[in-house]
Image 1 (cartoon, rainbow, N blue to C red):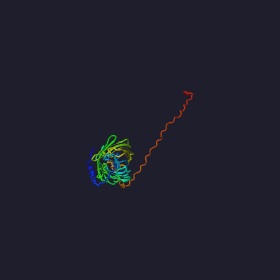
Image 2: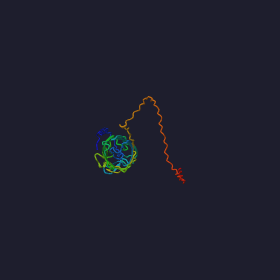
Image 3: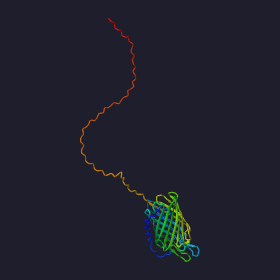
Image 4: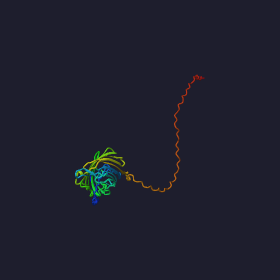
Length: 370
């Protein structure tokens, strides 16, 4: 496995992009599910190896998830917990562009439908539709194209475009940085993610009777696997843990996803599955249902003109024929007569003629001497 040292300069501008902390807003973003840009995984990011065919340049898609009690606050007196919102439905719309074999950029914008019933800490009885925070992300693969182990850096910028009153934004513009390692085995693929997030305004303290929710510093860790059944069908299992710093076991909402994937081989892929509830602390959500669709635009490989073989150079344009003098008259030669030989005729077999027998005549009398 060889690391591309020249790719580090792409990360430095992303880190410097992080802006100063904004004014403190008493809100948190209860939507902790961050849809993956990967073609094989749902919670985790891969190493920019498997999701982009060589003939692909762009992709777009949408992701839907529904969760009941997405985030709860624990009572400091041990009297149980209460939800900030009752249920949350989110549509994420995203696009991506492949800028090179080892570099891609992505953008997504969620739209949330938040349901309040009044039995929550916010005291809100209404339902709200609100836009979420804009996500801008790049993925930089540091390993060679043909390596079975892909290592990538993923800087991400969140821009506060959502509503803090609906608990789908914390009013912070911040940078996060993740690293991912993707390993291809003989029959399945494994991925590991590690990351760190700093969001200055992600803090909520409603009442002294409840422990504050402090999301300002987070350590993210995840591991997952993808198992293909054939060229079209496969399944994946993923665990993603969001740990608040300093670490508190009751303040660590985790996701364990189990689902399936279908692709038609022409750029269209569909994923669906569920998150198991209450994993990793009191703040964990109830069961979450996820479905997504993605279309990758495949381009035909362009064939460059083949150079001419040196053994067969290109033929030059023919020159016009030079004028020629008229040929001198030649004596005519009489044509040679070839005697015609009649074809040989096979003798016909005539019937044999009968041979006449001589008649019996008296012999002549000799003459007498005188």
